[in-house]
Image (cartoon, rainbow, N blue to C red; front, side, top):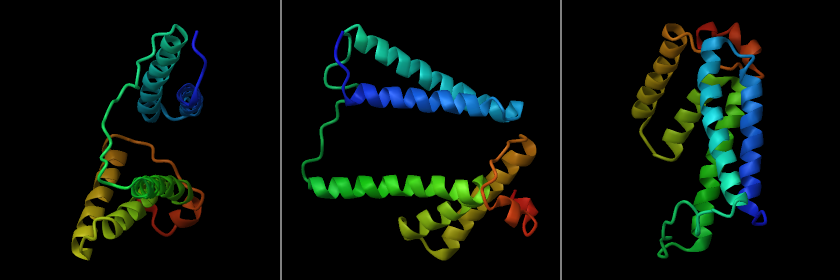
Length: 163
């Protein structure tokens, strides 16, 4: 049996996150729970299989993905770009937690397209309307449950169609 390193501890962390996701999703309405439970179960199984392979000494040498790094970019620049991308993801999660899924995703889409893509306001508005239309369609036609944020109840009375 090999000793555990950072990769195995990260895998155990993902197992914990997926187990919590399954536990939380079991309280969702049936149709809303299907995807999170299905996806988390697959990820959980893959992570457990990875840990078992490691414990049996059958880990893949060099990692599962072996991509050569682009040496033309400085390491500090790579770290900066990675941190920026990670910051966008964390920002999306915070917006969803604060404003709810639909409004948080809408604010994120407008911000991301305007700041990162440097798109014009008409294009940004058109893409935001398209994204909102897709979310509203999913909610009404497929009866998808979108989580409500911390401010959701306060904003709900102002724009009920958004929730």
